[in-house]
Amino acid sequence: MPSRIDESPEVEAWKRFCRRMEALGERILEDDFPNEPADRVEGIAHLADQVSCWLGWAIPHGDTTAPFFQRSNDLVSQWGGPNQDNAYHHAHIDPKRRYRVRGKMHSCEHFVITLRVGFMHMKEWGTKAAVSSVDRGIQPGEDFEILFGGDGSDPDFFPIPEQVTTLSLREYYVDWQPLEPAVFTIECLDDLPTPNRPNGESLAHQIDHALDQVESSMFGWNDYMKEHRARGTDNTFAAQQTVAKGLSDARYAFLFWNLEPHEALMIETDVPDARYWGLQLATLGWFEQVDPIHRITSINQHQAIPSSDGRIRFVLSHADPGVPNWLDTGQHREGLLTYRWFWPKSDPSPTARIVPLATARDAFPEDTPSIDENERRAQIRERKAHLAWRFRT
Image (cartoon, rainbow, N blue to C red; front, side):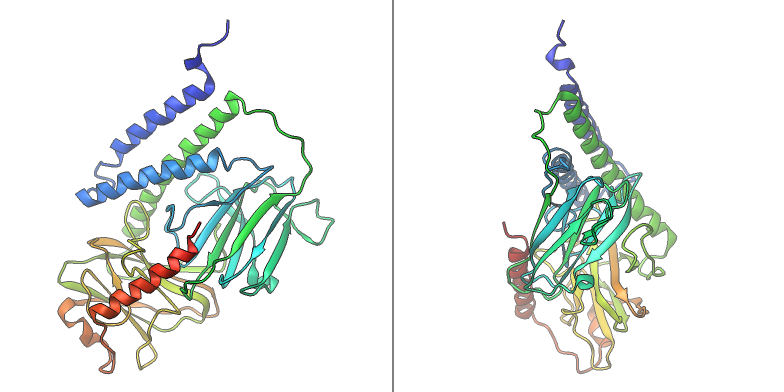
């Protein structure tokens, strides 16, 4: 006799997904996750975002024979501490097939494509190869085409290492201007027969894959943040690090802040000799960017204003100290500041110290300009104007 509809694999997988999401919603309210009332609101919102992200990745973006880029791990769909200066796109690929990525740079300054096994919060992950627009001599405004795959006999094709499952694309926008962003497309070049309609077993597998991704993301990044914080001291930069199996030219220094309303964190650094650098704020637990839309929670090399002595000073605080290079905590008493510098020729030596918020200006040279409320609001309007273009439909 035919199976009852509620015993079909896809229905059972969907029930399993819904049950586990309900349990996960309760689980993230426990004490080993951020549990202040506002943190819990952010946590449930983050969980909803993860459900949308990973169901979309597993099902409509799951076909390696007809891939389309999914936007995630950026300011639209966040996980894993996305870089505010990037837009990220990912596509499922098969190392046995051939692909073409092409488009137009417009205002994108440069990009990096990585060929990866999974994502960092999964049990199996790693970057197997990378190619960048700088390597290829592709400039802003230019058209481009990059071919991937093949059997290695055609030098025009960039090889796809075995076990690769994902082509990830990272666009850089360091000079935040309200200009047309890059356009990227991906297509499989192999001539393949039209597939059959999906069956229950394949859909059930995709739903279970999404379930695994959501749970791994929610638990994995919370554990990652706790482990890194436990290794260091709050309000102090940890030693620089690279991400094992990540982008080899990327350098990071973490600082977990814990500030009272009357305190400010004074950060000083020499200017990194690197193609790209910047400071950014992220939430604990969910590892999302602290409000990147309505507040200034990231400053990069184009946005930072150096002091007259050539050093660069930043202030991290809950209230505006009226000086250049303010990083707004977004009402988060605790969080993570990440100092990134990529493709470096030398490494910076940042320092941090707590000062009274009322005297934060005294830590700057006397000739440092003041930033009033109108100027700060103008800075935020300029940032919003750029983001409206970068994430336009």
